Length: 167
Image 1: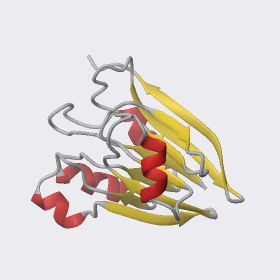
Image 2: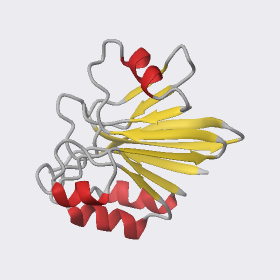
Image 3: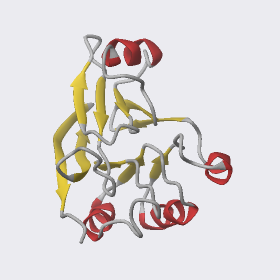
Image 4: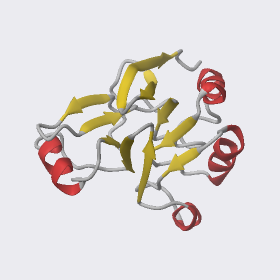
């Protein structure tokens, strides 16, 4: 099962539209996961129409319309792994411990908010993944998203994709 993880798209505030490379990759994914901060219902509509399956949450910058359509936490079993998706996990310091306590029955936690790509594993075995942002790199060198494969109850081929800069 091929997954694409994205977050913090911030359309149209940070970009007029999603990058073409991201949209192409969405077409290749079995499941698309978006960890919040859409800011635009049209982007949610677009991902719903392009994704075979979309798992998504709202973020702190999402208004009432998006909050009415999306949960704050989403959960799904994919390829034998228990996934949770949330926008914000708090400060870097103590993140693994805090998230393991908050999501004890989860194998993989996808989160956003910081726009900083993240891949770590808590002592409990919880894998934490943040895909960064495809439209607002903040202090990061690149706009990014993640792809991975889930098979036989394990993650494989976790790849951070760097997107070309916007002109």
